[in-house]
Image (cartoon, rainbow, N blue to C red; front, side, top):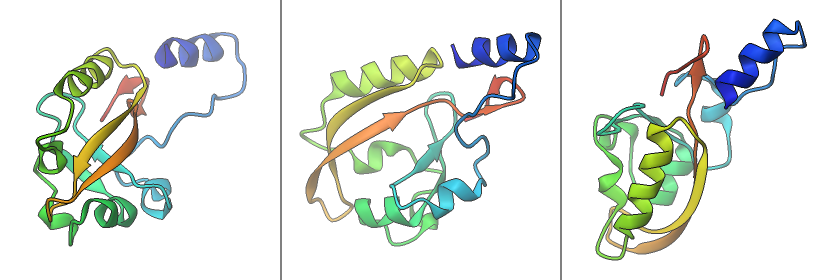
Length: 128
């Protein structure tokens, strides 16, 4: 939908649409006080970046402890696999979605995690 909207606005010569940050190095992600993690767009969704708020939320000491791994590092016994599969379905279709999951800090402590997933775009294609 977002890609179609971008193309439509360009065809009609309307102002460039506002979109979410479009690169993994975007300052918006790093500076955000909201926990943000970026993964590859395709399975197995490898973590490519995370901001300090996400590291703190998940009990991860540094980026090197999570970069190259998957979000399974914060999933555990009470993480709802059906909800995770539903979110991954939205990601595969290039759609935004949200959910509340039980996730786990690296110490094993569970926490409720409200998360939003959405594709990042670069040059009208899904990038991450």
